[in-house]
Image (cartoon, rainbow, N blue to C red; front, side):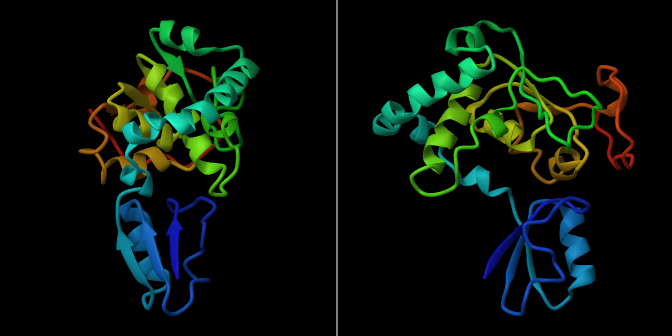
Length: 210
């Protein structure tokens, strides 16, 4: 049985102590990898890139059948947050940060939390449409600011400049060091150069980037 695990300190897809013998656990950052090994040394653990890197983003976006199905949904969803394809293209930079409880800000602001906006389902007939809308929005942008790691990964897959900042789970900084080459279009911002906003209390991130 295969499982995946998010960075230590977040809600895990599969808690390492609950994984049974014969399970294979994939971790996308060294901290999670070493943590799992320490709490369940008998579990087989592999440190690997986030599975999103295995997606051929251009092939997905160029699928004409999928485009016909997904484009009306994209237009409706963007309209819900006051955007359309033209306005996204015209922006010099667009903020695609999260608006949920994992935001590091007490009153988070974002032009579109596309991970939530395009949460259309995970079944085989739903996931491709959601992924197309997600990646299409990223492809329209000139530059992106976000605290969602998968938006950063989407930006990297499509060659879009992206400024990453951390959320409460610290997923961006924890994963950034192990996937820096893949995130060559992204820049990880240190907390001391982030725009000031009232922040929630959270553990200080153990990282620094020039």
